[in-house]
Length: 152
Image 1 (tube, one colour):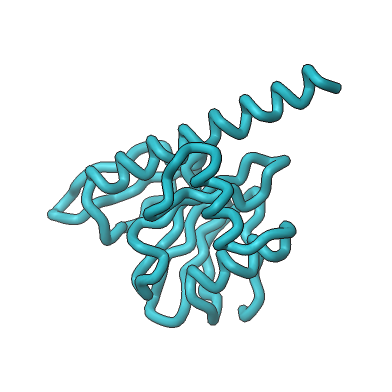
Image 2 (image 1 turned 45 degrees about the horizontal axis):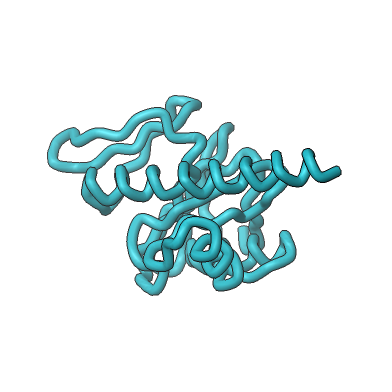
């Protein structure tokens, strides 16, 4: 598969050099683009750029390095990078679909709400911090939506 946009079933975009293993609620498959290219295309599909989404995150919660991004606002689709998005090994995880994460056999395992598990090339502390940042972004987004409802 060559073209793919993140959607409400997407759990993770796991980097495989110049390809990506996409995890969705009903299985996984390979896309012939990097995880960052998929994120860029997905942000463009929903009306922005990855850089624009990162700047939006900085405005909302003050985070600029390894910033989580709102890919699609109406469905609260928020992803965070496992490392610098400039890195070819950067993967992207959907914060609201993570059930648990833990070490097993020296590897960090991220378990999703559907029971799927992926090995992530990041430390527990990095993932913990990224989830906290994504939750802050989600709270800021919800707060903004509530304010808009009150105005209307």
